[in-house]
Length: 302
Image 1 (cartoon, rainbow, N blue to C red):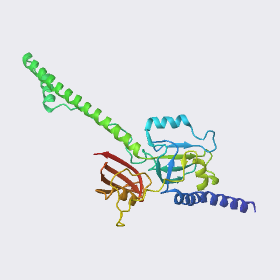
Image 2: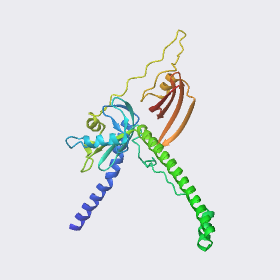
Image 3: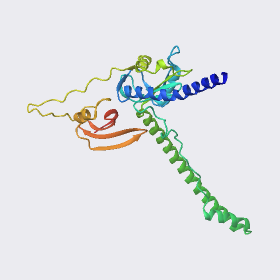
């Protein structure tokens, strides 16, 4: 009898453990369906890193402001307070809920984070090696002097080449730093809602997440895009100037900016990002869309 009770208890515990990942996956699917693709307005500047902003709902205060300030200083501001941005991913883990915005932050798998550029010293030429070998065998002082002078010249040539290489590497590293910095500012950010003892079931609802982030995020969404002017003939005349806003639909961007000159696609994780380049009276605008919604853009004046 005791054995049967122990076996039953063990099987029940095993079923419970096996059910946790399945329940988490089901809950994550519900949260993703509710949040992903929607646009929110930030009340807090977000750092340009996948580390994002850590929120501890059960702590006081829930946000560690010194650490938050360090991440802003080290990585720059990817999303400014007052900006609208798309929720691009919700991910539930054992001790945290990831609330990713505008791509989730730079530094995830596949993102280049190191500015190091490798360089090796210029090797000795065959002539220099041969002269060094011949010098050891040569006994004539005059020839030895000539050989040393040529070896010194070849060594100086190598040192000048090394100096040029180091200068080029320094320039390349600085450019790489600037590129990484720019990508950080374009890569979005995230909130990490953390629970030290594991995410409780009560936290896995849209209402709970909204309550936790209410101080930092407005879930009301952006205002609707302005309606294009209607001329007397009844045809819509889309304006070909002005700047788009994050969260607007692709068709709204086309109505505002006109027909794109160029369109391309790329994958960011499982998200397909569509880039459309527009030529306007104000300059060239490159806009990136996910699921037909504008998540970021850059503008270059004429």
